[in-house]
Amino acid sequence: MKPSASSEPVSGRAGPALLVAQTSFLGDVVLTTPLLAELRTSLRPRRLAVLVRPEAAPLLAGHPAVDDVLIDDKRGRDRGLRGLARVARRLRRERFDLAVSPHRSLRTALLLTAARIPRRVGFRESRGALLYHTRVPRDRRRHDVERNLALLEPFGAPLPAAPRLHLAVDPGAAARAAALLPTGPEPLVGIAPGSVWATKRWTPTGFAAVAAALDAEGARCVLLGSSADAPLVEAIQAASGGRALALAGRTDVATLVAVIDRLSLLIANDSAPMHVACARGIPVVAVFCATTPALGYGPWGAGHTVIGAELACRPCARHGGQRCPRGTEDCMHLVEPAAVLAAARRALAARVRA
Ligand code: SF4
Image (cartoon, rainbow, N blue to C red; front, side, top):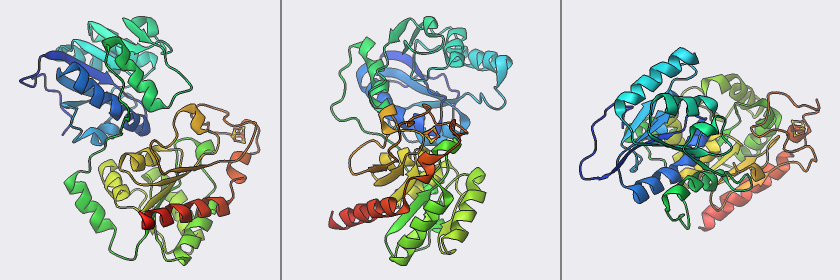
């Protein structure tokens, strides 16, 4: 499904024209997908559109609950107050009846208000919460999937017993992934060493040691990331002996999803690729540095492993930060490659048995 600004209702549905606003990071969009499915089932909206950043739009293409993906380029051409007013005008023309916002920013609350959406539901802890008509408590102790699903409560909708993430693989992207990943011996292990936040990145030497060891044991390793991660990936590739395939910057978001879909295992930080792998049912070994799964962003589902250093200072920030406030970076340096490697071996062995 292409990003769209269509205002045409989907025929045969009697419910509200619903907008879900989630303009946070890619991983947050993945963690919103169970809410989208439940809103579709419970409210039977005549139209369900999702507002996301441009880079997140491919994640929702093919989601069966979603009719349209709308764009708020809040870091680009829609940034600032003028951009907000422009997006609000676009949304106003769409004549939504209802907005549900798992995103807690002041900008989102202002945007939905300026768009004159007559019923707005958001979290009580949102900035600008007073601009929502219905404010839902957000339980910090729950996983973010469950926190998002709490937004169903004002509608009397039952919570699903086993919520599932949903990401479709685009056929074109699958073909591009196949071309990037020439056939070779199994297992195919993905390594995603990047993160937007510096204190969430495990050490390049750690990733390189794991890649070298897995390569020596017969695995094919592929290093994943955005173009911003390319220098990091190249350094890891060189340090690991040069045999890992470096794809950082060579995959758009849809192709990254398709590449991850072909993996036997993903080794990653607390980052978007980790959530993508969970959505595609790929086992994950996740290294958590400055953050912890208790913050609600751990790998969703069964069969995943989280590794982190036992430190009193963890977590030091909800998203991690760009600098270690103590200046030690212990949460990065004290994670042993041997622990990550052992978890990877266990995950691969479990996969073979399955
Ligand atoms: S304060 Fe602790 S958890 Fe935070 S970055 Fe530094 S070592 Fe890591």
